[in-house]
Image 1 (cartoon, rainbow, N blue to C red):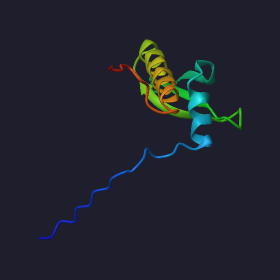
Image 2 (cartoon, rainbow, N blue to C red; image 1 turned 60 degrees about the vertical axis):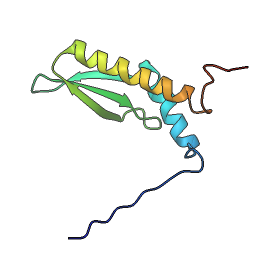
Image 3 (cartoon, rainbow, N blue to C red; image 1 turned 180 degrees about the vertical axis):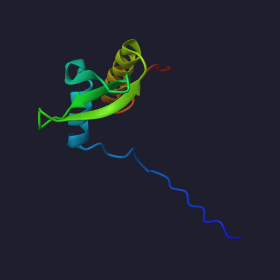
Length: 96
């Protein structure tokens, strides 16, 4: 039996496109999110499309309304953090 194994290394951090940054900014804004109740009683979180305002993209499903709102809050926090680090690493401590 033969296994194929491949590794990759980066000499620099992968470059983030402007399109990706625009999406992150869009989903980091809580006003671009909504919660809908599905026929089975679950709640679905969705974010609005950047270009087509009538189009919504489903993200998660939760059993409770509170769980769905927490999922949105967590997603917003996640993308805010990604935007903070998009310009490179953050210096947290220096030594002399």
